[in-house]
Image (tube, rainbow, N blue to C red; front, top):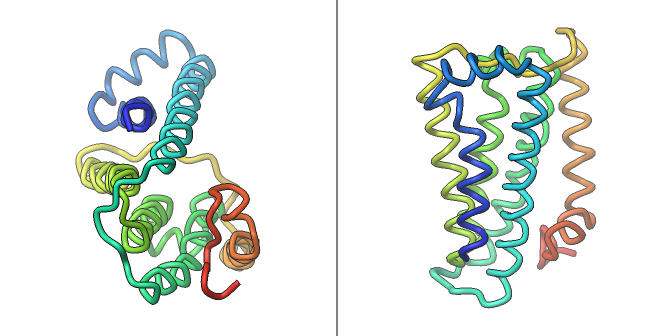
Length: 194
């Protein structure tokens, strides 16, 4: 559990710099150059992510059960994940989906993903991981009321982008259902269906 917590602190800490110190971030990025800043930031975030993955894997070896969700709730959560992938892609494919969500489709996808995983999983490691990410996403959303959102690299706006986001999201969802989740996480997305 220690490795998971350290990983979350590093990963979410790196992703929180703009929340707690946007002016400092901008000064440092100006001093070292935006590309150098992005490289340093990416290395730190990747180290944090690696620690999260390792820590979560270790914690799953000796799970501490906090609650056991019923199978039907796990299946509903898995089915609702169908919305996460198009929302994720819409962040990088500007169209009506991204506009309707006030350019926060990535945050909406993150909050939905974390909430659905909290509904479907009840170990201490699950609660620590998914609630941390959910609280971080909520903090980012609140912070956007007081600061300008940072531009996410994206393709040019197009009326085709929504169709691409939905189609691509459905393909990703199907890939996860048919084995991607089991391959990455070690647990099938729909244990009772497949």
